[in-house]
Figure 1 (cartoon, one colour):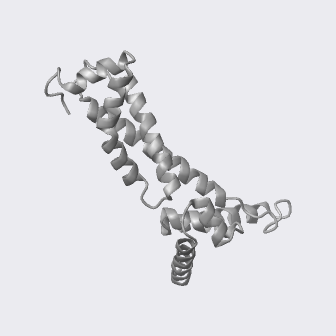
Figure 2 (cartoon, helix red, strand yellow):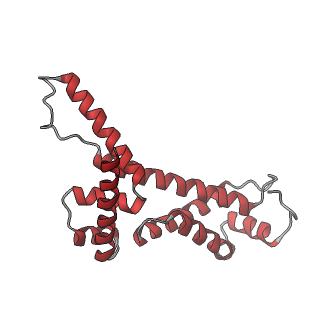
Figure 3 (cartoon, one colour):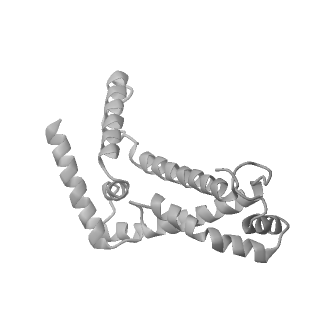
Length: 189
C-alpha cells in the first residue's frame, strides 16, 4: 500500500501528533476509530463482551504504538501500517487466551496412575489424555471451550455467566452443545 500524496491531511496530523500535539492525536484517533472497532469486533467473534472490550483496548494500544513507530519516509501509508500493527497485536492476544485456556485443562489427575509403580503406563496415559484434550479443543468453538473448561472445573452455569460476562441461558446452551458434540465424537471413535 503506497502513499498517494505525501502532503495529505493525515500526514500533517501525524507529524503534529508525533510532536505531542493533543488535538492532532485526538483527530487521528477519531479518524482511525472505525478501523479499530471493526478489527476488534472481527477478532472478538466467539468471545464475551468483556473480551471484546479488552480487544478494543489492545487495538487502541497498538494504534498508539503504530503512531510512535511509523516512518513517514516509508512507501507504506500510515493507515495500512496501523492496520497491520493492530491485527498483529490482536492475534497475539487471541493466542495468549487460547494458551491460557489450553493450560487450564492439561493437568492429569495424579491418582489416575502411580508414576513410581508404572512410569511407562503413566506417560502413555498422559499422552492419551493430552491428545483427547487437543481433540476436544479442536471440536469446540472458542466460547464453548471456555465454558466447558470452567464447567468441568466445578463452576455452575451462573458462575460461568458471571465470569464470562454473558447470560446464564447462553452458558446453559453452550454446555448442552458441548455435551452433544462430545457424545457424537465419543460414539464415532
